[in-house]
Length: 362
Image (cartoon, rainbow, N blue to C red):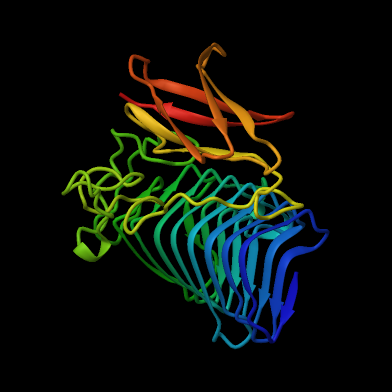
């Protein structure tokens, strides 16, 4: 998809399997993308001299030129990204496997940048840019043998303001200056390499509960973010004074993607042929991890009236069968009496099936 000098609004769209960029905008465009998946293109997003508002965005599996690239010649463009996942992208020849920015102001709130690869700087590469990161988890990004920075690389007069973030297990260096004139202000963040400046920073294993980077109950990142009330987690209406999952602990901000005003669960489109999920089967559960019961949400193709959910333990033993149909969209699973651990939930409809992982924590 390409736009120039325009302001398209995209909602509930899947952009996938294109030879070039999944989404490209130039020449003063101001697109708005909400609930959009950009997957398996050569490059996910390419933006030049444009300002973008991106909410509920998944950029994944783009192989060639990385997840997203934002550039501006005059430094007047702004990128706002909120509630996002940038994972599994590859930039074979340049910097910035997850995100590359040059000359823009970029604000990122509540998101995950993980498992991306680049020649150098697997996570975020910034050049002559202004970056603001709040409650972002940047983990497990990798680089070539000749690379220097796995997490965040700043080059040529960049400024970074970062709070309530986690940088962990990125290859070689979590964060580094790569050129002159750079500066950062980093507070209340968990950085594996440690950092000598700032307030409230720690360097302790974040103890993630799963591959989605939820915090386990023992995580040192719970309630460790900025204590100011403006950063508070969303309150659980059924448990006043405590955070609404996926945030944890009290109302004090959690470091990482799920703290603060919160990365919430949304239903990204899954089918290439039908971005509104009419021909695909989709399943997820919430909360996850959970302590006693969880709600399993599902979507079925319109022409299927009956389907089945099966739950398996880590040994592959089937422990529960649930009947579902198209007149419903969810079912509750009560795991009373079962041990803590990983469980698999399989939805079968006609000849289609999909599986999601569930974590029971007592």
